[in-house]
Length: 582
Image 1 (cartoon, rainbow, N blue to C red):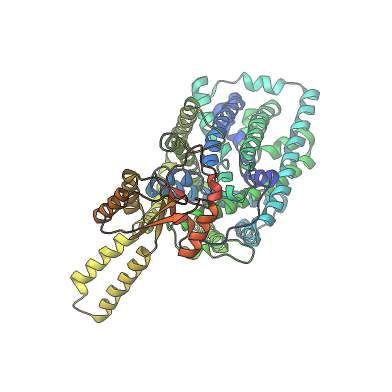
Image 2 (tube, rainbow, N blue to C red):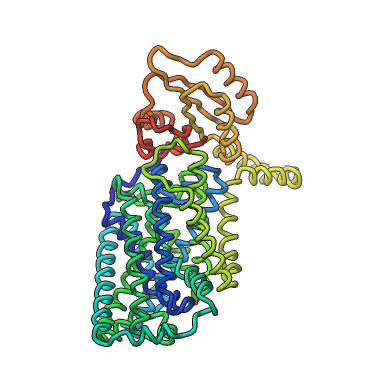
């Protein structure tokens, strides 16, 4: 049976806060990063990033509007390509969340150590991760209240810092800004300075993808508003903070204090009280980014587990409706990485950078495939082809720029990515691997020991159990060519040997004899899949899907339909997770 869905639905403020804490925390470091590589033109690089993010608003809006289910880039590629490509996106997203959680928690405690010098950073980081694991286990509604408080405090702190910086400039003038602009251009030329500044500044939009990973927990119509709100925050504050920093601090001082730039700015423009407030804000909003990671990874892992890419024991829910095992496993993964690196997380920055930018690029590719392969699928908005191509190209440019700036990042990224994708590939091909193990047992060891014979039979039972999962395809017309594509997809992507093909006809209508005869031919063409054809009287509705799921004990996400047209009477999200297959 399909696990019980989380009932809580989040409004605009709660949804924006959960994802916004991650993306808005970027102002703590991205302005300094941009100054390091673009110098006095850092604020221009950050404005370009805002323009690129504006293009991605339409891209995310179209994809998630057409496929409003948790999973982000994974969901986009699952419904337009195959499980292999979708699993690549899922692996990259998981790595991005893991790196974000560990880095944000550690940085938050590093800021707190400035306030509480005796603080043991590693132990405090583990404690912070545990707190947010607990919040997610309690429920997403409770988590959102914490996120809202952090988000409002963070925006208030940024407004306060910007205002006092403005007063400071009114009193002291623009001499520092003029001196900074008189310095030689970084990297010898303005285009190169902007290129490397833009590449580094693109890290300032990490977290933009998070809202797509818990869209099912949001109220109707909220998702595009979260995209708009995140874009506004990033486009206003990131360039503004960089501009004000260049106006009140020499570039040399910005470079020296890059890890605590906003705190130094606060001290410069208003004194130690504002510096303290900004440091406290940094602790809170970086903690909020940890919460974003837990919420986002819970939505993503639940989705890919429902699709049998990860073990089903992760789907167990508590009385609050939370998939608590996902949060616990994610917590232990984060702690293990923290302990392995001993808190020296520079290497994880490479994982974070490449994984995040790759996910953005894959989301753009998912939009292309959606336009080509699901062009009749209803969607609330559409991105233009030109803007889509510019956005993907911009992300690729940023990815290349970061690899040029930090060549070691690629090697470190592969050290984390290869084990992750290997685990996913094992799950995707587990029946083939079990069959290979059977052959090895039979060839080498079966004659030797009865225990191995029992192992042979046990593995066979596991394979049988996996393949006994039945799938359903709803067909609305006598289209044998389409059914052939369905069977090819199922044979290549799913572990099953049973398929129900269901047609729903109005009273007095039925399938043609030729169609039934053609189904018999298909049944013989695919001997490894047992086909059962069922004709039902009535209307194809979400209620019928739920009724059949309960009657046949088949989860809804193992049910497929073809891509619906604009005339289809139901939004896709009302079908409960039915997948598009052709």
